[in-house]
Image (cartoon, rainbow, N blue to C red; front, side, top):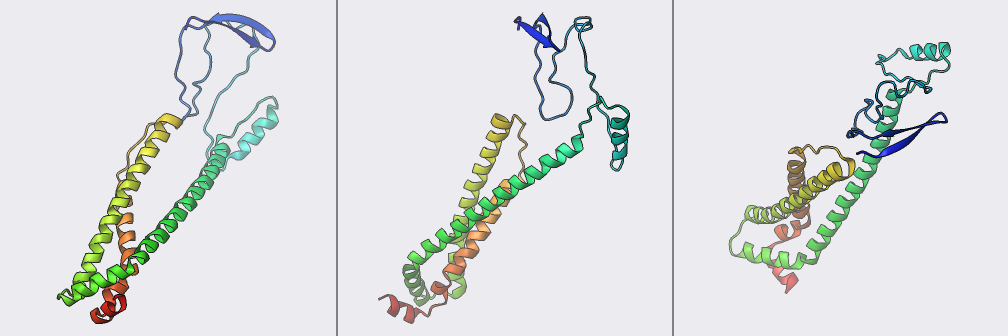
Length: 220
């Protein structure tokens, strides 16, 4: 505020003092990034005019006739620009989804590796519980509760991280107000709980299905 700047308009220069500032809103296509001068300051300098209009879909021939009739008019089709931006965004989204699926696959591999490393202990514990009178249904419920708790905790951590990262990127990097969506944490909780529970039950089915006597003999 108060600085004096030198402006160059088609080779002609003049000086003007900054009297006010405005915030640029880059998320819309309104003319909000120009310098506004007092009336009469720019009357002696060459000028270009800018405007905008809405053209319904299927009326592209209007733009062609406009350019043919007025060759000095530059027409910028924002629809084509936004379509290109959307294509780029879709490609980035697919890349992120691929990384996300790869991370899920890696997590499932780690989960199965952890289950396999404790398979003998689980088989022995299951045999002892079956010997003491536990039914197969009770065994399944026990295993399901364990892995469901692990999955819900994993989903909660993942959802909190996703919401926090999206908030930082939106407000600190992109400068766009963040709108919280309950669907993201709920989906994270459900996906984590159900996914880990199913994977855990599949990985520990040997501990549930093995006969008690055969299991005890195998591990001892």
